[in-house]
Amino acid sequence: MLSKLHKEIRRDGFAPDFFLPIHPDMPVYGLNIAFGWPLPSPLKESYEYLYRELLALGYDIYVYPYHQTHVTVMTLVNFKKHQYPGEKVVEEIEKLVPDIIELLSRELSAGSESDIKTFKIDVGPPILFKSASILPIRNPDKTVYRLREKIALLMKDAFSLEVEVPQGVHSTILRFLKSPSDANVFIQKFESIAANTHMGEVTINELLLTSETKPYMRGGEILHRFRLGE
Image (cartoon, rainbow, N blue to C red):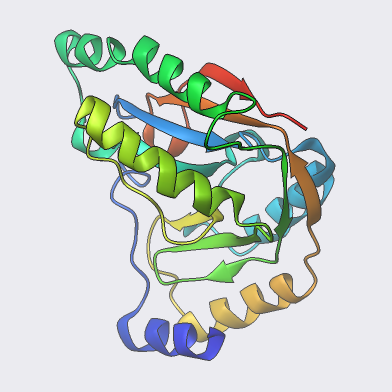
């Protein structure tokens, strides 16, 4: 897989982000179901070491600080579709929040058909793509996938939302402000860092409903915490 990704980068180059180079604090509005905002505290020390190592790669990149890390379960309202939202747009979206909380609370409650309980994730070393770097996450019991399958349909039916489900389970940690001048050198340095990165396994005991008021969770708040049963 890595050789294929590296080949693509060497062929096509890197893909700088639209927001971060010029509009990092653009007012936006989105809603997400997430967990690990930030990543659970047992991972903090390892992540902050990785953060410092990646920053040393130069000024062409934006590395997520620890407090910005998160794992998106699904996007209910995509911030990219609500740039510079007016008050009326935000108010219309916010009107949905109480009903979303009620529906999710019911579905996640003990004895419900979904029966979602605490689950483990195993966070791997970073992987480099042409537009970003992610921490791949293994979810051995497939809880996140079962949750997505169940909840995404409910959200679409109940609120007519354009729900978006990410591919796989991951946490994005790096995006490009501009293309590094030497792709080969960047890849080599990145892979050296990745080879020495060890994150590990942690337990997730809550899901979050979050707002997003600046791109990539640079701003926003936790609207509700859904505690998961043991």
